[in-house]
Length: 587
Image (tube, rainbow, N blue to C red):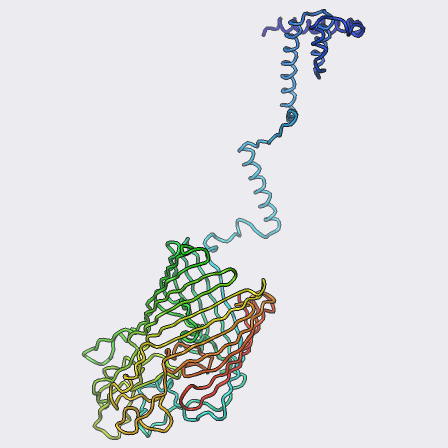
């Protein structure tokens, strides 16, 4: 638009204002006069634009025609809107919304990014000033993969032996560790167990420290170190005393875990017992070497129902790679391996959780057998020496491995011992858990084991030379003798029942647990090397009850006590009661 046109429009507006000043008094006296156009203009609602009200008054007085007034009103409204938008743009205000409308503010992406960056800078500035975080002192990303874990337990143990116990119970574990041993030589003294003297205030501790590593989704690992008096498989306790000597640290766990798909769990290395088996079969501290695989159905069977199948192979002993050391012809030494499989069903009915499982554990290559004739004066080994068990405690039936021939009647006849029976163990478990309230549970459990490899015909399968050394009944006699043979008193079954009230594993402050149960385990139901090491001070051929309780006095700090009362099932009298008082810190 030209400057001349703008000047004319300003002059027109000034003229209209002057004319309105002269006509307003007249318009006030003639409000009821005029034609239909004036009446329509009066009916219009007053405007907040002064020029609109002025034009309407001129139309009402007949000074302006209605169509000319409408054009002027439209022009005044448009110019007022333009002026208002210009003012709002300069002030940052928004026009008022129409009546009944809801305004939703819009923040551009660039503004949001700026706000986020400003907040980040403010937080970092506060962190630097407070000294609690700074980029130059932040831990690297790889450290977030690691989660430490561990515990320390101090235990006071009282082992109470009955005064009526037999005092001639042979310590076959010591014979096995010292072997070959002249067990058949009447001139050789045999090691004997302490069965009548109480052991008071025997204090030990257990310390374990490890780390879990979550490398990528579906791939994890664990390394765990632990104490222990020896490298045996069933205990990580270390006895205090001994002249303040330093303590050994062993590699207790080391495994890789792969979970490539949902419901698939593969472990390789040395890891916790993966099976739902009680301490009848495996001590709670045992770790298995090898590989295990678990497959579960998840919720495929319905809500609250899951079926899990587990299996694994666990080498126990590969044998010496250069056995025998000084022989030209090396015999083939078979591996000793545990093959295990298990089916487990978990179900939940209302608030009641049920878990049941059936497992089969084949300790392959463990059963002893009599060697070829072996002249010990000139031979350093016999053909079945490799079948000597790695670990023994007490209870299993044992037979000689060596068929010794000698030209010297005064020879010491060094002998090795082996298992009389094979061990293929069927294991069944049942646990029912229900809540009493939000903090208290009740769990009832039952366990059963049966050695399917037990065969009484194996007792005398090698005749008098392979007769067992233990588990014979009272009255003397010798196994497999033609006259007055000894009576075998061992067995193949075991069972256990327990009731737990409170928290299953007290850890948080105020949590508690009380438990009681009964246990019965015949001589050859399981391998005595791997069963619980506390009840009856380890081994099989025992029965009795146990009670206990624990209480978390602080988060991670637990006090506990147990009383285990056990007697022999068969053979010489051997009653042993054990009291344990614990304080344990877990983290």
